[in-house]
Image (cartoon, rainbow, N blue to C red; front, top):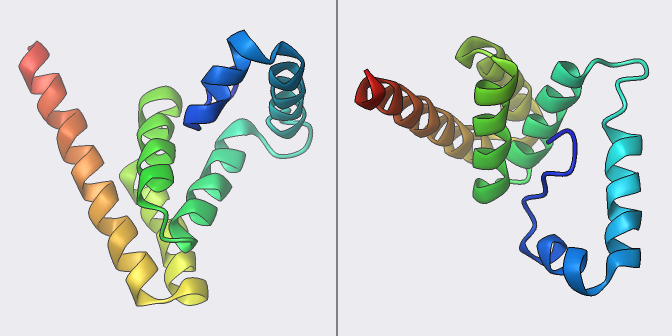
Amino acid sequence: MKGDVYYGKGIRELEGEYTDLYEVVSDLNSAVWNGKVLDYKTQKLIAIGIAASRADARATKKQIRSAIEVLGITKDEIVDVLRVVLLTSGMPAFSKSLQILNSVVEAIEEGKEDKA
């Protein structure tokens, strides 16, 4: 995610204990998510595709959730990305990612209903 939000468990430990390494990771994060040519939304869609193609359930879920909640990326936009995953990485990665997408969308919708 843009800014200093990291999903890797080890990164949080760096912040307090190894500040020099944390700063390197933070600087790299800023350099990657800079929106120089591709906007942040496009970069996020690419990140979803990479995580999904690796069949990394945890990363795929985190990327999809932040894409929807932070950037307002739609389910249909994510499905377009997953179509490319199907072509390049095959049915298992596609199917797993589609299940994750559906569960995230369902959880978000249930959360909105709970708040109403």
